Length: 60
Image (cartoon, rainbow, N blue to C red):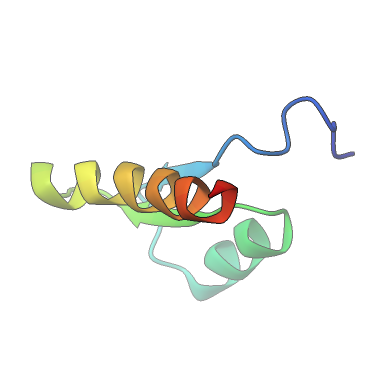
């Protein structure tokens, strides 16, 4: 269930699974991003920054 006090917080899944079914399940549950391990540091930071920046743009 969505909580109005926390629904603005981006959810980023970090997983070892490359299975499309897992990706679709996370998207259906509301995840903003799904990153598969192992990852480059820049990929990880971008996966965090992009949802935050898009929320900042929406707020303005």
